[in-house]
Amino acid sequence: MKSKIQKTLLCQRLLEVMENDIIPKTR
Image (cartoon, rainbow, N blue to C red):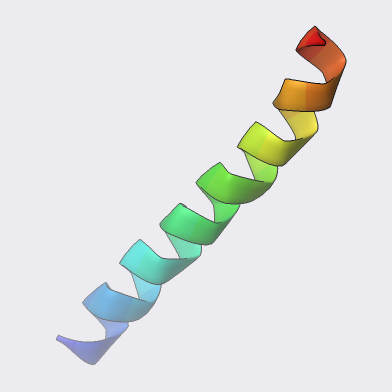
């Protein structure tokens, strides 16, 4: 249960980082 939450948090953080990387490139 706890590991699942950690995984989702990691995925969310990864998505945020990816978005931050992509947004400036597209601009």
